[in-house]
Image 1: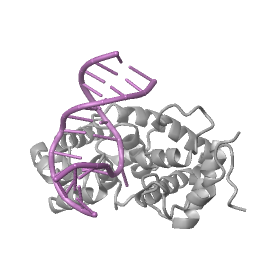
Image 2: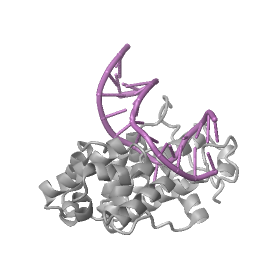
Image 3: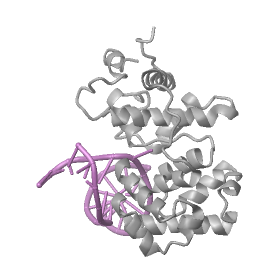
Length: 237
DNA sequence: CGCCAGGCCGTGT
DNA sequence: ACACGGCATGGC
């Protein structure tokens, strides 16, 4: 019986993952061909619609700048012009140049070498880069470098609030990024290491899929795969 | 037209 | 620790 919905936050999140998986199927995600394209997209999509990111990526492709070497030789003002469609270009262009500078200085310009470093150190290093916060750092770690870390975003936060997935701890205000990823780790982080990254990958992709379907935004969440069962279940402890 | 998108940062409590 | 405004463009 899949209708009944579990009480503990971790069980609820697993249930949600399963419902989304059976609704949307395998996502195998991040819409990019190479790790460096993932990184470009992670920066460019900050508070920006993906459609606009695609325009910028097209411009970069035409300029031969979808690679580390290509971006390295691009002057920052030229980079600004190319990524203009995805907004915030006065911040994002220098931020991308700073990433390449870090990669050059600390990893000989090699994403392969960077990926070989331990996760926690990499995350700290990413977080002190300009224009890199928790979500961008985790997206780079997971999707570009293959490290097993959960990624949360605005979609997941809205889904949580809409469906009260985390109502066991006192609901004070909105849920922090760290609370979202901690719960995801507790719920889905017990997988064998070899498959862990793909589990987090899939779950995040599914939250984006249902998020783009407007879950958490329309009043009744019409057609939301999480809706029916959650209506008559929620908070009684 | 106005609203807002797969955040992040500096500043002020 | 948290709230808030600024950052910029383009799709809908």
